[in-house]
Image (cartoon, rainbow, N blue to C red; front, side, top):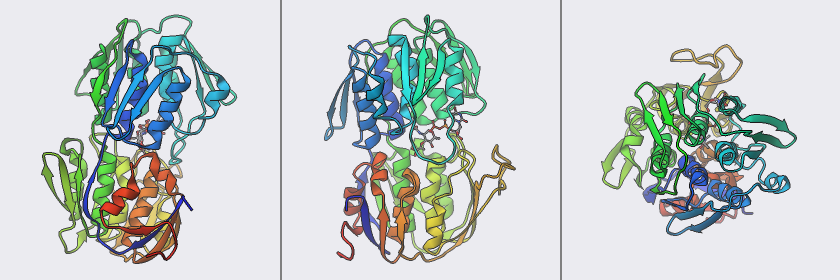
Length: 442
Ligand code: EPU
């Protein structure tokens, strides 16, 4: 069965793998290409399902998308952008969260847009109120309809001054993709400044946009009348890199992650070192390894950049089950990102989740009935189990747990992991992991 993997764990991962462009940048750069008058070329593109979904959505809008998977190159030609049939768009409803970012570019190109109901991981409510408020402030009309949202721009969108209640990644991208072609100046305060957003700004600047970023989370954009196509090499996927690093640590292994980039991972590297992991930084990647001896417990809080990314949390928690003492993890970005620990409990981990804000400053989820803090007590040997993948990062964490646990685990729903981890079974193979599609095959 395709969606099921049998993993014989208890062996350290050893070897080398390569990470290519960041899922959470590539998909946005693909949307940016819609704004260009000519074709764009994006390089270092990973073969993952989210890229395929955004490619299909672009094609439904009349955009020509050519992919060279081996070379990791996408060519996107938006010369003939058109409104698709709502029924066609419906086929992609629930597949991804990226369609919401089509709003600004489509409003500029066509004067209207229909955005299907969104998908993505169920790690919280994931509302889109900031996105819709932003679009309204630019002058768009927003109508909620069955199956999605219809937007129209009776006249050219106009620059505006906006302060985000929280530095949302998606809302900041929404604003950028809309403001670059709006009339006049837009100012965003409390903006997200993740490296993926900075790379999106690089792309937009190459296209002809005028964008400045201040040190106090303020971004200013001077709208321009036209943008051209771009050629750009995507920054590396720092979530994937950290996931493999955590897998190396949890299994007591040694993994060279070619493509990993130190500057985008500073906070992760500090934490990795505090836990007792070692790493060496090289020109083309980072080697992550367990130096032997005990791992140390830590206190950790997830946050927006430059803090510890929420997406790094789940894989690292598996490694923390192997650390001596009590670790405290406070999740402040999503209200519901500890669902994946249930499976770890079934494998012998000792983890207690709490509604309180533990070990750090109070966050917006305190006193609101969300289990968003966890205390992990270790080290606990993990034992094999039958697990079902809950979401993308939680799923990869389950895979790490199965690789750490002695005996044969079955991991069901692994196709979810394809959304964001390129060729992960080939990479597992390259690292000497023991797994198969058939039970007891090894
Ligand atoms: N939020 C709102 N209203 C909005 C938008 C966001 O309340 O209109 C809240 C969210 O509910 C959440 C917080 O703001 O509590 C942060 O959400 P954000 O908008 O920053 O996240 P996102 O843009 O939806 C992206 C990544 C996530 C990553 C977050 C944080 C993509 C496609 N997704 O999501 O990646 O966790 O930023 O860095 O870029 C993943 O890759 O597995 C993943 C979930």
